[in-house]
Length: 339
Image 1 (cartoon, rainbow, N blue to C red):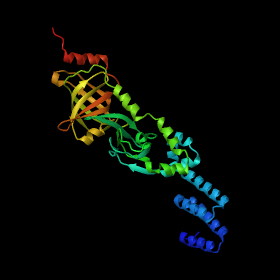
Image 2 (image 1 turned 45 degrees about the horizontal axis):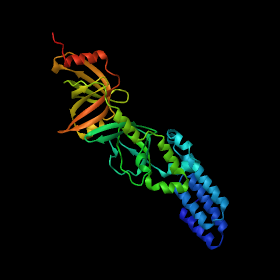
Image 3 (image 1 turned 30 degrees about the vertical axis):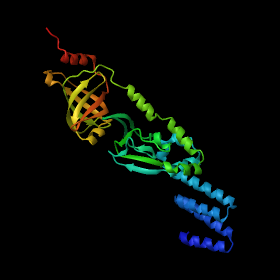
């Protein structure tokens, strides 16, 4: 259809000749073409121009508006729609388009801090692919609250308030793809699709809140008796398929119970933070107590405590509780029978 500037000049010529009908016709054709080319910003700008040229051209105004919305809907990433089907099923077409095209698509590498506890966060994050870890820092202790993945939302605890500080920290555990909604766009979204923000808020209220996670974790302590005894722990990080990654490293056992253990290692703050949520294969031995007892256990890191001199206490929960027979053997190491 030629260069856009040429068409704009032609529209101005039609208007100078008081030929609104021709200007409306050309604008309508340009809007349709831009929408077909998925240049939606240009299509909507020209539709605004159509209003200015002739606000009474209702047939063309409505037709082009519907065409833009249909083309927008057809251009939405289907994988994204599938991931967030429950949310989008609650929205009309205008709301779906307003939300999807109001967001930015962002790809972030692993080991990247999305936001820190205490920050002011002005974004709502929709996770499409990848894995993240949410943790809460209490004094020198970092507690894993949740491992996040596709279909999870992050930032809802601050997004719907004027000013609020992040209660938790979130770090990427793998490369992730996110759709990000800026808080400043809420008014614009509601203008395009009235009632959209309350529907997003209602959806977020169905998700387990940060407050719920914190409450649950405060009760989720190792209530089983902890046995304090010296031992060595050879630790191997595992991937999602429980295959070894990186080189194994050694830790010093601090305590152990039927449900988990704690050991101490020397490392960096970043490396310690990255252990949160990791699956581990742990081989325990007790040579210092002149014992032949050895066993292995799979576990998951649920908390990390910071200690002086770059030492960190790693708390891991077992995938399966220790057998009572093993616990009896451990008790025997602490309190050997006297004859």
